Amino acid sequence: MLLGHLQVAKFLAGRSVVFGPRVWLASCVQASGRAYQASRSLVPFGAFYFPQREIATRVQLSAAAVRAMSAEAPKQVPTPKAQKVKVALCQLAVSPDKDMNIQKAQKAIKEAAQAGAKLVILPEMWNCPYSNESFPKYAEDIEAGNSPSVSAMSDSAKEAGITLVAGSVPESSSGKLYNTCCIFDDQGKLLAKHRKVHLFDIDIPGKITFKESETLTQGESFTVVDTPACRMGIGICYDLRFPELAMVYAQRGVQLIVYPGAFNMTTGPAHWELLQKARAVDNQVFIASCSPARDAGAGYTAWGHSMIIDPFAAIIAQTEEKATIVHAELDFAQVDERRQNMPLFKQKRFDLYGLVDKTLQ
Image (cartoon, rainbow, N blue to C red; front, side):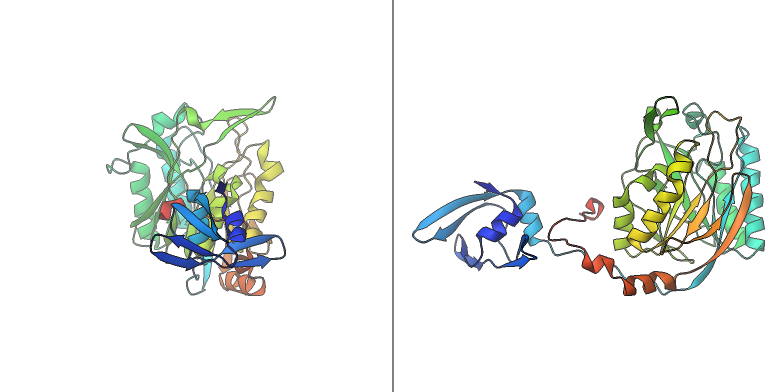
């Protein structure tokens, strides 16, 4: 018979597990009368015999069952030393002129730094119109060094002496296109690159239909980066809808999750703020989102309303729909305080459900 890990744990209570010359004693614990967890000293995957009186019952364990029994509950990585950081969101107006878009971004970064910002964040697809037609035309090969947008952002971060989350731009690489966010330190060094993991494919009849997968390829990794400002995780727009991404980031000890995003006039008013508050509260982190400014004449109209939300779901900075820069000071001690007051991660029932980060396996 094939058993899952909870059934096996219950079955093994007080029995010896015999495998070849070795013997293990399986233990189990009853949790709220509903579940059992086997000790992590159980045998590896294979066919096992469990002596039951004089009869040996043959049980074939699934690989998932063995992994669940043998794996320890994940630990939450401690956050870096808390500090206060001034953050700026640059909600930029995007035009079909790439050079003009780059100049606008450079100007906004300089202005934000002069106002005291040490971390500056740009919007999703700030260097081109948001459309499947535009992505291939505006795409840049970042890895080959043929990227005027990324080069300009590196220079701006160094000149301003700030950490820069440079929104996202269309990236070409090995014949594929990605929606890619670059992060730079205050010396202009590229610290990390996040490719959008979840592609924006939706069809709301009478409202909006868009399929990024017609041109873009999904990213295959999470992005957690230690910067001079803080430890942050990166998501792009539609990534916001998937709580698992934020959960992994919280487990890795991030203090801030940044989402350059361009929700539209249908999903924006309904879900933009709601989802950010959910990610902030569930994971006890700051959330910062940065949208392009609204252009009613564009083929895709962004909602705008860039914002920063604290770990208790309070909006501490917010724009409306027009091009602007908004500032806020983030006290990352709030992250530690909230996690001490309500230790949600420690209270998770990993004996009943799992948090799996396959990128670390």
